[in-house]
Amino acid sequence: MKIRKGSQEDFLRVHQFTAGCPPMENYPEHVYKIILRYFGDYCFIAEENEQIIGFVLGIVPQSFQDTYFLWDIGVAPSYRGKGIGKRLVREVENELGKKGFKRIELTIDPANLLSRKLFEKMGFKNISGRVGKTIEVQGYPAVKDYYKPGRHFMVFEKLI
Ligand SMILES: CC(C)(COP(=O)(O)OP(=O)(O)OC[C@H]1O[C@@H](n2cnc3c(N)ncnc32)[C@H](O)[C@@H]1OP(=O)(O)O)[C@@H](O)C(=O)NCCC(=O)NCCS
Image 1: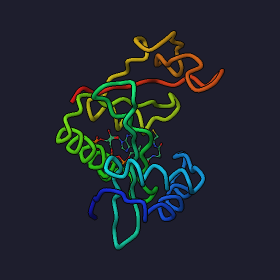
Image 2 (image 1 turned 60 degrees about the vertical axis):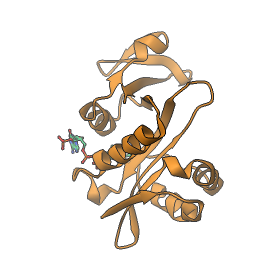
Image 3 (image 1 turned 45 degrees about the vertical axis):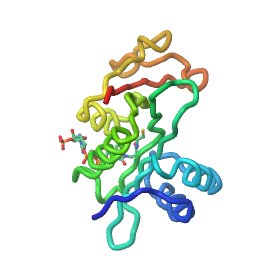
């Protein structure tokens, strides 16, 4: 297995990969083209035998200095639980460290146990209480109506 940066040529294969990696979002093809063309340096692909088995994507927000927003991450179902998610996050952290970033922010659906486990394990903290009015979902504070009414999400951060 190897991990490398994404590039815009990967966009159709990444689209195909995310389609088979629920509950990762499967956006239309052009979204991956745009993200990989403009933010490919901040996205990493895990491959085995030329097949994509993991992908992490993120963007650099304009209004948060030194912050990277880790948008989504997914590992192919048959490769989960083998440390690939942690390796992808570590690649992101190493790259951000080289570029002088200080902080990673991300959001998690409180129902997504595996995602919460991954990021807690990697030292991320739930900062929902600092971001907005919170509501308890499945025992965890989440920002009320964060993505739309009724779609409460937890906001996590890690200082790097
Ligand atoms: C979240 C996801 C990327 C994690 O990737 P992964 O490669 O399976 O994760 P890892 O093997 O690196 O495991 C990371 C930690 O999660 C926890 N974990 C992994 N598999 C687990 C399982 N089946 N049950 C409980 N905890 C588990 C462990 O704490 C593990 O760390 P440890 O092995 O040091 O104890 C993967 O489950 C996935 O693709 N999920 C679907 C897509 C998704 O929900 N993406 C997140 C949207 S933000």
